[in-house]
Length: 226
Length: 287
Image (cartoon, rainbow over the protein chains, first blue to last red):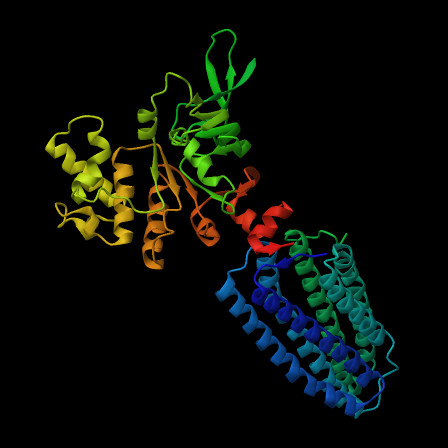
């Protein structure tokens, strides 16, 4: 069992930051799920609700950052606490960006849902499912300090990149077949791009977990990918 | 051809790889290492006060022209450790030592070593500023030197100015050199003590919690001074203030119950300590 800090107030603040991060991650997970659902099921009401959720995620970011600043100013944390606080500040940024991307997917869904579908969505829900899993795995890895699961997220980013390329090739074919498809295809392409970027943010989260657990900085290296 | 590792006479000395030509006997430097040679080596150092063992087989190297911080909870042996480095430890009745302390590879506890001369080479600044209260600022600076003989006036003036400038005190006291040292503020008194230590041109400066009696501004001045002088001296600082250790030192050693638990580059030790006990101490955990 992890030992507690002698200073109960400090312990409470760190715990509060951890809980805020998890709450925010949960909200963002729901947003990704609902964004894809709103597109695939052509459910514009769900898209609108999901867009509203982004405001809560933005608020999570501001409040968690503030708590981290307070801890830095009052306790000057060291060792794993220092890694935790500095990474919490980075993680909220990644989570907030993921929220923004889910919101942008919803805005495309609102537009696309008003129009005739180009074709049934196949790879987009597949990508959505994988990024949902990546975010969940990254968050679980963070909660449990589990490097193996963090590595799994980093490795699986390539799957998303491959699916994105498939979607792109398919959309290019559609656009070449008639100019009336171009606008819709561009919106679908944006959705796929957002999912691809969400996966990149999940990779960032996983890299933060590795640093948090063992102090090893693996950013910008191919480590664990190949 | 013979390859041998030798030490250069450079200051600070570095390891070099020398290729010796067997015909001429001439050596040629083929590789110079940037790794500095330790100024002080503590080897298997143990210390006791009576029956109580306060240090347990410490192996620790102190490198020149840099700051080594010693951290650890009260009673961990950190002050005793630095007091062993200039033989102040032996002033306590019932104190004894085992193991070695080597200064430039010379055993400081060898019978031929004069502890007074050793303490000129290895000076110490204490927790509480302790200028001689009745002496003037100037005489305080010269106190250590006067133990070793008479000084000419011009030479003394030069030393006083140099030491006070090094201690970042000159501008504040240059017009008060004849006034008593006790009239200075706490922070100024501590810098005066540092000037007194530096006046004898020691090679090593030991600092035992030099800022614990000072306010944050005075502390910042001492820390700035440490940054200024570290390129000329080997500095070992004992501190309870971990942020201070993180700010001023290149290497940090963590002591616990008389044992050296972990030593390493300060930035690494404070962000990713390797030993669980260091981690717990730095993060303030119990249990």
